[in-house]
Length: 359
Image (cartoon, rainbow, N blue to C red; front, side):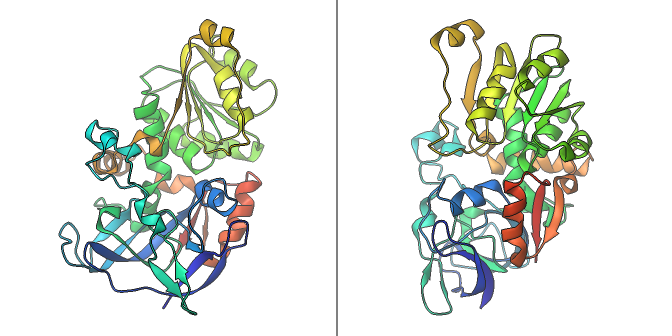
């Protein structure tokens, strides 16, 4: 029996209670969690913006220690530190074979499985594959990657989503070059990672945009050289900070129609707008045909930072060890499982950066 945060139904509050985990079967790994980050995607699962079978144990950004492995698992062993990978690639589908592993057709195949039961025997699904909001979890072997050496597991948890996504949005999706100007919309966990990634890319100026003035210090510590309070004049302010042209790259980390539109309008002619935030179907963004021609901007979606975790984790880890990327700077609250609902409320209110569940 282990404690876990369960989503009993879409729209229902999380319930923290005991669940029964099985021993790992063939091709599975049991992990004792060290930490799990609270991501906006978890919130999107609770309100139905993103759909998974329920009841489910949420949480998809985590790291911990292997307790046991099933038959056929050879890349990790009991006692190893691991980072959970919520979107593993199969290596066989069309997207994997052309190198777009972040779009793997079977990445979320495990979410429909029954992976555990509650104390009354009701079946539970594993949220986004890995069910990290629990003291322990059992996952498919392809959902664990060896944790990078020299990085505490509590901080390595952030590598599993926020950092891979924010770093990848800058380096893979937008492909920011030295000297280019970057505007990051939304200073949450992913936005803070994107700001650090822009600094690593030697971008400048780096403009952070958020609705909360309290985020300015966080943003500047992460690498922002300028901070703009979101308003109807955001695009105008960003143009003023970038020689009247607009940002070479805008990275939208919110997933709302107005911020996507604002990021687009803040991007210079011929620039790139990358949308990382996950919005609902009700968030309709409109463009007229003439502006698409006139501005010649590129508007791109971005899944998981267009990252290949197996390839990118060692690169990011080296930035961490060298002091170029500060994982701890993303975390504003260290909490328990019971505090996750309050962390969701803070996220909705636009407060803080990443909340990290410590086990």
